[in-house]
Structures are given as structure tokens and as C-alpha cells.
Length: 332
Image (cartoon, rainbow, N blue to C red; front, side, top):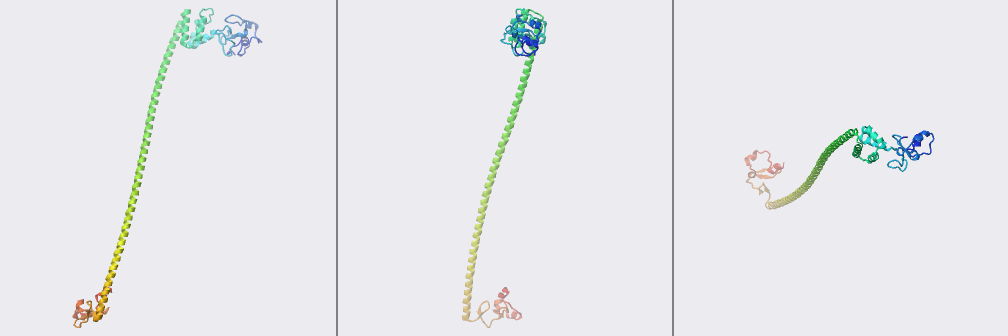
């Protein structure tokens, strides 16, 4: 293909090899092969070192090229004129590169400043350097038709630079806005995080207080239970004491009653002994029989009682059909 540097025989045969080869000339017209000459020196010798431009099909020896090439390159290769025209087109646009003065100067091999300006254009790294070289070329050539195009290109470059500056400022403004937004978001995140931490600390504090209150309530409940147990124990002890005192009182009362019964029995025994010594005794006053007194007999127990001791005289006794003494009345 035409996209690689090649020798004239390979170019004529339509091959796409990466190295020059002058020995293989099958299918090549002798007249056409004779017409292929170096554009720099005009010689047709050393066909193996001839390079064909991929843009204009001009031939140049590797040792005639500027800079000089040690061998046929394997990639695309363009002659100096095409390289200069492509550089002008890339940096200044197709209008400048296709203008007649530029084409004429690029193609004019007898111009004294051609080689110098071509070397400068090849070494230019920025469009500003290329414009300086073009201005030097215009001043050297003194072609007024190229000046308006260069000035228009410079104006376009200034406008493009201003547009890039405005775009950069807009980009910086947008970046500053984004930074401000990110800063605000970080502040919001920090605020939310602080609120969450504060809420967590408050929840932990509430939980600790609740635990303390629960422990305090538990301790109070334990103390209350101990107090209630102590109170119940005291009440039980008091009940035991009261029961013991009641039992002692009952024992004392029983002993007292027993003693009283014993005393009564003893008195009764003594009285009976006295009655036995004195004879039979009657009535509740336990006196011996007196024939002058009025007596009334109990129909239940059969004991005799003095009328004046039970509050009954002889007249009343004559009307009583049945008499029951007080002792028998209480028992029956």
C-alpha cells in the first residue's frame, strides 16, 4: 500500500513491503523505472535507497533526505514538501496550507531560505513557534498575499486561546462550585454524624441512668424485703412472746385457780369437819338446826334453807308449790 516507505520497484509493483528492494523489478516498465529519480540530487542510481513519498510519489535517496536516514523506514514516509505542507495544515488550517504562495514557496527548490525554514518548521513544537517561522518566511519572501491569511490565522488563534481561557475559567468556576458543594456536603455529613453520635451518647446515658435506677429500685426492693422480713420476724417473735406470756398467764391463772380450789376444798373440808364435830348444818349460812326458825326445802337437791336467808317468810312458803334453790336453778 501507499502507507509505507518503499523503494521504487516495490511502489511500481504495488507491494507494501517496509524495506527498499531494487533487485526485484518483475512487471516494471523500463521507461517508468528510468523516470524515477531523486528529487534532491536528480540521480536514478541506488534504487534500493530511493524512498517514495506516500502523498506525492516523489522519490528521495535516504542519504539525500533531511535529516539523513540510515535505512528505508518501515512505516509511512513523506517528503520534506509534504511534511511541511501537512505541518502547516495541522497548525494553520487547510486554507493557509492550500494557498498558492505557500504551495509555490514549498515547491520552489531554488529559494535560498527553503531549507532553513523547512528545518525550523520540522523542529517547531507548538503552533506559536510555527507561526513565528511562517512570519520569518513571509518577511523573507515579502509576499503580501500571505500576510492577511497569517493575520487571520493569528486572530483565530487568539480567539481560540481566549475561548480556551474562558472554558478554563468556567471549568475552574465549576470546580470551585463543586468544591463548595463537596465542602457543604462534608459539613452536612459531619453535622449528621455529630447528631448521630450525640444521639448515641444520649441513648447510652439514658441507658446507664435507667440501669442505675433499676439497680437502685432493686436495692430498695431488697432493703424493703429485708425490712419486711425483719418486721415479720419481729411480729412472729412478739406473737411468740405474747403466746408465751399468755401461756404463762394461763398457767398462773390455772395455778391460782388450783390454789383457790385447794383453799376452797380445804375450807370445805374444815367446815365439814367442824359440822361433823357440831352436827348437821343447814342453809347457805351453814348453821345447825334451830327449831324456832322457818325452813324451806329445795325440791331438786333436798337441802334445807332458812327463810330469812333466801328471803321467804312462813306465809309465803305456805303458798309455794315447788321451790328450787339458787344453786340448782343455775345448774338447771
